[in-house]
Length: 323
Image 1 (spheres, one colour):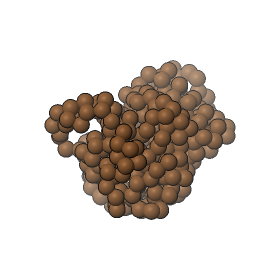
Image 2 (image 1 turned 135 degrees about the vertical axis):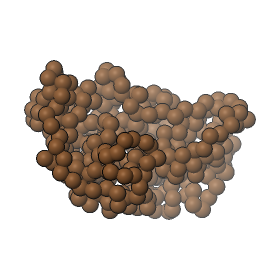
Image 3 (image 1 turned 90 degrees about the horizontal axis):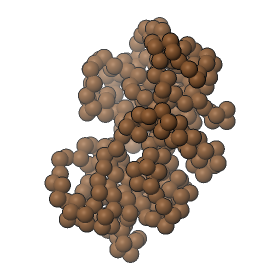
Image 4 (image 1 turned 45 degrees about the vertical axis):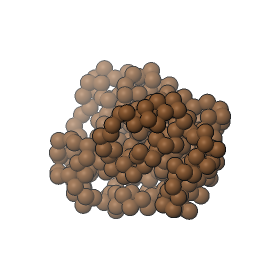
């Protein structure tokens, strides 16, 4: 038996309970991982609250890092004792769990469990957003919403390293300072400024090549007013709520814009893509061009407090749970 966070009915943070659960042996193609650190992500709140539907009971969590402790039938390429990180389906808020081997990546010795747990979901998300969804080129101008958040800080650092002009939005002067420290050339306080008007001012009316929007309802459709004709709107999260159904002719009216709603799990569906993306991410982190700011950790037993802090926007950078 191991300790795990179990949700038996969806709702607020208090629906989460620490329970003893039986994990069982890993099945064919699976690996049992003893988690050393677990990533806390805003997407976790969507599942917990019921915005993303899943049958109850379930265990939250989509990224973690730890040690391989058992191998299922047919697993090749891993051995007991390997340090691994992964971004996967629900179930990470636990001391141990079984994971499909195809979703695991081996951790370099110089990347800690906490760093890995803070970047497997967020860092791989930033990788595909910048390198595949809209491959950012030197001199292009990008807008990153929630630039002081976990994904946002990685996007700012990485895009800066790619030679882009980075504009970030954040709530309050303190978070704007964090965004600038992470590589944003310009930071807009969306609480006190009209971000679309400021983007137009900053760019001299040329606007942005792409907007990376993990906020959702609160920043739409204003984000569309920040994009040059034929530019791209990338909606990858809903921190303020889901974007309501919209008239697609808005994209025509705003300049024949492109719009996409990607998800990490499509981009890592092929093993060779996951390996290449992880290699790219690890190289950026090891080079020092991208730093993973794990600014806060909570014992797994304090998961309710962690979710309350997350939803109150009190967290900055990555937060991890320690089982």
